[in-house]
Length: 184
Picture 1 (spheres, rainbow, N blue to C red):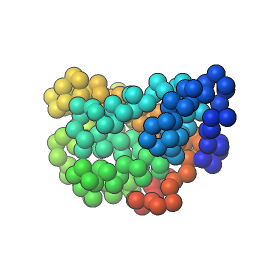
Picture 2: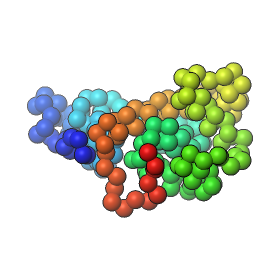
Picture 3: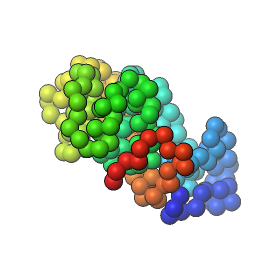
Picture 4: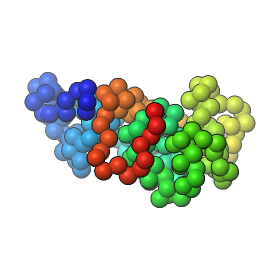
């Protein structure tokens, strides 16, 4: 982290050290991603982690569409860290190289499947206008149902929060980049 040092047990207030231990005892420990920023506030990180796990790994939204939402958020928020972490996963989940590359480079997007178009339009309308049109809402609602719509919206908001944290501290990218750097 270029702007702040890595959180350590000793760097948090004494009354939060047990919470710090709890939050960092799982896989990855303190980590290097946006959650490593949140752990500077151990109680906040403790509360955020279950929602992170749910929207990223357990949501009813199909994984391919979750990854599309994550990279769309990364692009909308100009967040190189989240982009690097998820662009390759998006490709693995079946998003075309052409789509991922065009999104990265802010180029015209290729034709997409209707489910991809619905999720992308929903995300971009929220990012650009803070609202969604009735048509876009119905497309996502018909695709995912009420539960999926709520989960997709929350995923977009959660990843926006992670991007804010990563960008605010200028979170370092890993040395072994898996994707071309996100132009910002």
